[in-house]
Amino acid sequence: MHRRQFGTLCVGAMAAALPAARSVAAETQSAPKEGAAEKGPAGAKGLTEYVATFVVNTSYDAIPADVIELGKKSILDGFGLALAGTKAESGPLCLAYLDTLDSRDGEAVLIGTGRTATPQLAALVNGVSIHADDFDDTQLAVAKDRVYGLLTHPTVPVLPAAFALAQKTNASGRDLLLAYHLGVEVECKVAEAIAPRHYEDGFHSTGTCGPFGSAAACSKLLKLDVPKLRMAFGIAASRSGGLRENFGTMTKPLQAGHAAASGMEAAQLAQLGWTAAPQILEAERGFFHAAGGTFDPAAIYHKLGSPWTFASPGVSIKPYPSGSLSHPAMTEMARLIEVNNIKPAQVVKVEVGANHAMLQALLHHNPQTGLEAKFSMEFCMAILLLERKAGLAQFSNAVVQRPDVKQMIEKVRYYIDPEAESAGYDKMTSILKITLKSGKVITGRANFGKGSPANPMSFDEAAVKFRGCAEYVGWPAAKTEGVITFVKALETAPDISQLAALLKT
Image 1 (cartoon, helix red, strand yellow):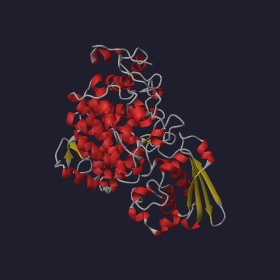
Image 2 (cartoon, rainbow, N blue to C red):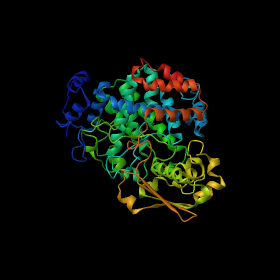
Image 3 (cartoon, one colour):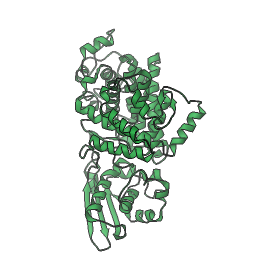
Image 4 (spheres, rainbow, N blue to C red):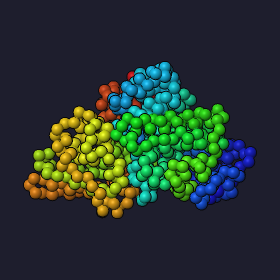
């Protein structure tokens, strides 16, 4: 699978020859551009150019209507989480950091505040806010050796950057939707392609793969051509970063915000003429090899927009502000509590079986803070048993330190179950066993949680979550409903200035 040498053909001629995303994919079968490929997996030549050409030549009309609607739910979700994130401990610290930079004014809104900043700094701060509560959407895996739900959080590296830059460029709602979808598509396919050891050995893929999505979205808004977009990808690759060891700390959302800002920086530098390696994806010393050891080019070639990630395998919207791998067990636990009317005093022990990758991600077995609790299956089970809910208010330092919470956590055993292990990493198989004082044993099992494509949220349900986030920070009801209405009809907006105003105090 190769890419034809275009010579001096202009972008306009390429657009005429490749009017839709699928024709771009087909074009990759022809001869490679000279010097575009280095040593790598078979079929990897011309990969960076293929991705760049897809972004440049894909129009709004090439995106299926159902994919547009799926994206709107995640966009609304992202804005709600940006509001809620201002109340996190990192919220005021972000503003204090901007003060050290003397950056109080700019073209882009800092969501949930009365302040503005430059687009790049707004992307950073709004990205941190969206990911601060670990309540944002998650990518699903295609291959069984890719950990389900732990590839990327697709919206957080893309939406803050695209929204900030769209304000500066006076983009329309259609422009924003197109840039957002292209960014998510590139980010998710890059994450799916890299060898699983990238994540397993400690990289945070939202921070490492996210800059490619941000760069793609921002480059589309800036109308970069293919050569400049290839430069943007080269820059973004050198700006990517993030480690899983930082899960449960403020640095995890910082990695997401950095991904959004870095992708924008890459696009802006490329627009000015900044140079980078034009074959950064496929090169022997490029992103995939350096960060993953190897990769599967077939996960990208012929796959961009065919199918769109939002269509298959889909994107999950979180019902709880915790690590996504906790959600099948939480969804099932909530159901079992309700059906059996389980009272906390009745519980002797709780056993939750899962695969080893889930235990590696939900790594805080005795959490001490609200952030650590987001990555603790033991806490998630305990708080549902105690309060029958697990919202933003439950994941706080004060709640985690309560004696009754600590006592219930001690009753929860989280372990590797052979059956869950053999089910494959493309599922989040969770096997529950609750033993009561009466001797009764209640069992349950779930592969997916509420909000996944297998059990999706409707737009109205996503709006309920948005209202909850807005209420959590005391956002005015009129503005809350205004944002919901605006996003639902985003493609009709001539510009996004009204939306920006609704998200600012």
